[in-house]
Structures are given as C-alpha cells and as structure tokens.
Length: 401
Image 1: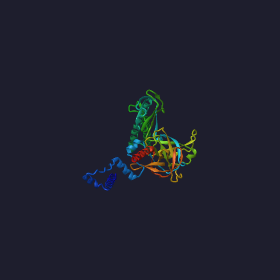
Image 2: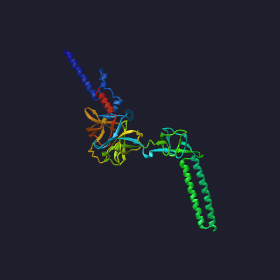
Image 3: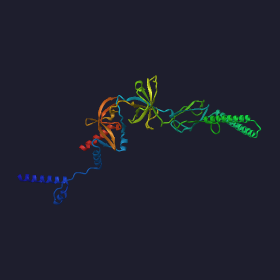
Image 4: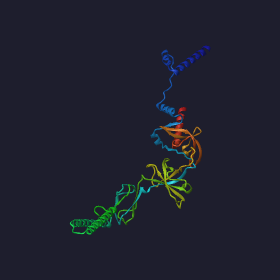
C-alpha cells in the first residue's frame, strides 16, 4: 500500500509540474511528446464572435451591447437626444398634424360650365399649374371674343397715334391732337392687357371652347367634389390639394400653460411608433377656443420629417425656455430598465449601446426625471430598451456558462 500511494503522489506531482510549465510558456509540451509522456491538452481557442465581443467589452467596459445599424433598424430601437429639464417644466399636450397655409389649396371653378374631363383621382400627384379638369363654358368664348376685340382696338389706336405723329412732325396738326392720339393708344393697350389677363386667369384653352381647372400648388389630390357632366357655377369648390411635405403641428394648450410659452421654445413631437421629431414653437393664438378652452400653439417640425401625416393625432412636449433644470433630464418610463438591481438606461456609443446607471427622481404621466447619471445631449434609447436588456442578460449568461 505504501508503494502504491508513493507512486500516485509522484504521478500527481509530475502532472502538476507539466501543467505549470505549459501555462507559463508551453515549452515542455514538445519534450513530453518526445519522451512518450501524456501531453496536457491546451485550452480551446476563442471564436471570432467571442473575440469581437471581448474586444468591445475591453474598449467600452462592462454593460456594452454591440449592434450594427441594420440590427438596430430591424429591432425597432429608437433613440432620443435628451435635453435639460424637469417634469414640472415640461408641458405635455395633445396635438394634430395640419397643413400650413402654403401647403394646401382649394381649387374652384373660375366660371360657369359643365365638367367634361377629369384628369386626376384622389391621391394622384399634381404639379403647380397642371390642369386637373376641363369645363365647357360659354364664358370661354366670351373671354376670347373680348380679347380679340380689345386687340383690334389697340391696333387701330396704335395706327392712329403713328399717323398723328407723322402729321405733327410735318407741322400739319397741333400737339394736342398728337397727345389725344397717344392717350387713346395707351387706353386701348391697357384694355387689351386686361382682356388677355382674363383669358389667362380663366384658363381658356387654345380653341376657345374650354376652361382649364389648374392646381395652384404641387402636392396630391385630397378631395374631389364633382363628377363628369356636372354643371358648376363660378366659385364652386371642385378639388382639394395638399403638399404632404409641408406640415405644422397644432397643439391644444391650457390657458395657464400657454402663458409660459414663447416663440422659439423647444418642443418634441411623439409619433405612434415611439420615435420623436424635434420642433420649435412658431406662434400661439392670443384667444382661447370657446369649445375646448385651450389656446392653439403652432409647432414647426425641423426639416421635412418622415412619419408626420396631415390629420394625424400626436402628443407634444413643450419646454419653455428659462425653466429651472438643475442638471436633470426627463425620459419616458420605458427607457428605464433594472439590471442587477440598479436603474440603468442605454446610451448610444459608437457601434452599440452602453448600459449607464442613473438615479431616478419623480414620475408623472409616463415620464421619469433623472437626477444624475445623464447629461443633456446624450442619445438615449427610448424604444427597445428591454430588448437590449435581454441581450445584455443573454451575453452575461453565456460568459457565466
């Protein structure tokens, strides 16, 4: 028994020595193979994905989730650049996306007539000055006849003025006759210009039979209130045209809050998919709506934002300038996640998102005030934070395994 135990001790000591030398440099692995000793297996090499993840963790620290732009888009993750402010400073109101005055037009008939052609349907695009429909009208012939008569009178007046000038230069007629001829010519030419403008404004076609109904702006047909064969009178509303690229947001603000808002105050428009659009206060009405008892504050979105459709109901957050922030920021409740018992948010950093611990303050209306851990200007995940938390937890579980 003593011999067996001594041999076992010697074998264990040898194995430990081989393992120690292998961990330091692996120099004795080749020698053990030459001497016939059993080699110690080397640790498996890390996969490329694990290596990239390790490099990302080494560069950004713990709690970093690396994601490509394609994965971010596919996951529906949305971020918002936070601003300094408090829950008490924010004014949260319901609003409606509307068309500004230059972004919509009502197309009417310029004269009486019957609709003989309709070139556009609801939703069709239209360019400024493009003919939408044709009217067969007796007024078209009247406009053309008046223009032709005015053109004839102007030609006769020009000829009479030229003749009077020749006679005056020959000292045959008095100056007053020349002046009277020049005045008659000017009056006839002015009448011709008026008649020509009437023809152009009415949209008379080249053959003088039809009146063109044209769109004053580019956009899409949003309303059609006529049909083929219908007899319409001058001023009748035929089409509505709106430019979907031009929008404004009309917010209904209570009277007490409206007094705090000034033009130029920053605002954020919340879309149904969770994304946001930056905006500024353009103007506000000085009086209240008699039905809702609210003032209308007009918000102007930045640039040409996608996702805003005229007539759409949205929610807006307005932050009056000069409100005391005290270094705090406000986020949606969904942006806050619990990781290992701590409140964290995911901040966009480089090619991924970093879980950042924060201190949560008061809550109200689905909003949370962050008192520390964030600063204004950082891009924070407001939609999809739970998915990032799940991915972070899955990565920790793999490391633990």
